[in-house]
Amino acid sequence: MKIIDAHTHIDHITCNFQPDVVGAVCCATMESDWKRIVDICNKDKRVYGAFGIHPWFIDVAEKDFDKRLTKLLEINSCYMVGEIGLDKYKPNMDEQIDFFIKQFNIAINLKRIVCLHCVGAWDKILHILKQYKQSELPIIVVHGFDENEDILEKLLRYKNIYFSVGKNAVCDRNNRIDKIPLNRIMVETDAKSDFLLNDIVVKISEIKNDENVPDIIYNNTSKVLNNE
Image (cartoon, rainbow, N blue to C red):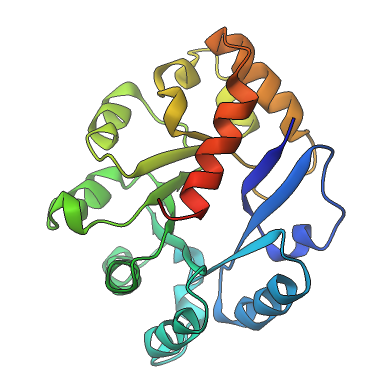
């Protein structure tokens, strides 16, 4: 079995990789992460970097962060944009939306993958997505997806949206994972160490009743990271 951790963070990535994990996407949450992630990516080719401002940390972002983000992304065509998004339970939603749209437009202009955080604000995310032609949208990886079927159905209308899941999704009594098409599923630790990703993949195989799940999930993630 080969697994790529589709979403983790800088402090976790410095630890040893879990069994069967052959790569990982390391997502920034604030600008102070950016250089550290670049250094890790340069030292370890198994690590893929994503750069941006998380909605929890917009209050510490400095002026012209978007110009510096653009300049950084232009250095390496493999760099992604993330972790960006909206969070209903954090203040300053209007400012969150402004930060998200700035970064999302950078991803569109540079044709970069987006690592998306959304908590309780899917109405706003979906409204923003409707402002673009589907052909304009980048690949979007919805991190920690654990939402109802109505939200899933609306997101599945976008062919470039993938769903990165972890422990919560496979332990869900409603088996929401069963509703996500297998060719859109990725797996993640989100920097948590209380479970193994290979156990998550095995659980998804059981839910889907498909022994090919490990290969399919690995191929999904590889395809996304190649921006295909």
